[in-house]
Image (cartoon, rainbow, N blue to C red; front, side, top):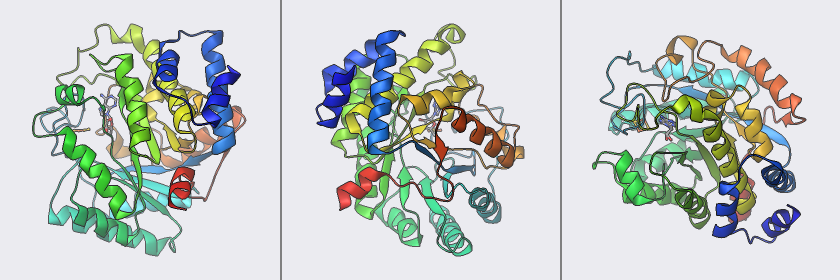
Length: 360
Ligand code: 5AD
Ligand code: FES
């Protein structure tokens, strides 16, 4: 499969190649695709996995995405919101553990108070870490002024998933108040504000065709995205999509494999971006994140949220590591990453080389 490596290096991976990769069954041919993607990863971003300690600060959400376990209409979960101090404390834990960066993620709200709270948190984190902690936000769609205030306070990366680049599929997953075009606009605003911009999709959604996924990869490329975070769709019991994939248990392996194929295709097509090996992969197989790294991903987001809150932040069924604390996660991860011959970039930001290349 060396031709895929060559083709990737000359920037020629296109729709047909991606579709071909996504359609492969497990076996020698697919293994060599993963090898090609890994070679491209080594060449463009290296074999160091970078960490972002993720703080899941609240499961109170103004959105009602049909797939998500913390959606506004979900009943039967305890809602929580961490205080400013608790968020700062948890994010600083990722600094103390040597992760170098934190991701602040939670339910999406829009209000002057919400903007002010995170502006203050970002400033505190910069101050307490002497400017050394890298800060990624995942706080949903906001206006340019809000994005700018948070950027000016010191955040420098932002994750906002498009979920699907097919507007019809997007519409089938969201109430009409959540709009595809405004999501795309928000990605552009983030770029205007100066962030390294991350997006991603869910993989293996009901009604999603391989062609849609191939277009998702091309969407990342067209939007000149710096970071990708994507993972397999996993039904959640408290959502309208709980039964949308009949007999999901028996489909876990193929769902995981499709997620890995998307990582490989994205690495081959985009080359120098950061790609996260997401927790959703680990929910489908205990070594799912290592498999993600071997398929071309280079970022891991260990949870640093206080254990007492983790049970309540379940976006999908079977989310792993809800009862291990941050330092247990750290040693477990260290072992896992070393077991596949990679190292961890402790105390470094691990910025997207693509961002450096495009802003040079
Ligand atoms: N399965 C997989 N991923 C999910 N997300 C939300 N619900 C699910 C689910 N059931 C993802 C979405 C969202 C991110 C925070 O979590 O892509 O952007
Ligand atoms: Fe939209 Fe959770 S409600 S991703």
